Image 1 (cartoon, rainbow, N blue to C red):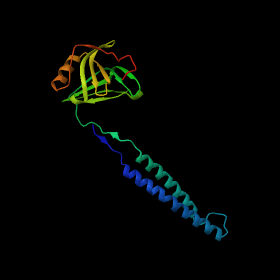
Image 2: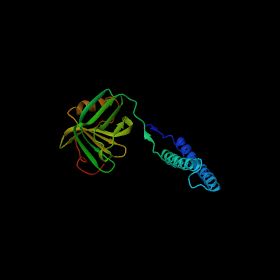
Image 3: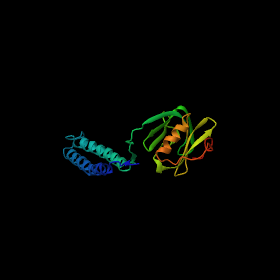
Image 4: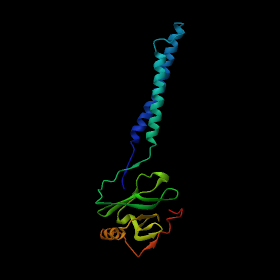
Length: 198
């Protein structure tokens, strides 16, 4: 899948401008202070000192914003394909640290031509992973049986297993086999559903 790179060039430019604001701010403050000393005034003279502090503040903000843009992580671009069919069900999927089980209607399987996406909706806890795959992105697609019913299991190249609970499992398997997905075997047990393994 493609990734959308953050505008790091703009971040560096803002950082440079922020750095340049520092000397300019110092110069304004120094000139304002000198004029104040020469005229022996206690109050700020001609607003130069105030302008200097304002410029210093602006420089700090630009520097922080530029630093944040420059260090921003690439964001995954939204998929452009349009699903031909959407099936609502339950799922058991890996997360960044454990597994997460979602009952109906919080799991969505979107099917397209030689592509599918399994995702959870309304649930953003624990970094639940979305499986967006074509035939070359999975090593196995199979009928699965678990405590919550039957469905379809998917294994990706990292060895992670995704389970989608639905009564339409056979129809899904036939459709995926037609588009070249590696569909195999009889029903298997959802061995990872109640474990911490991804």
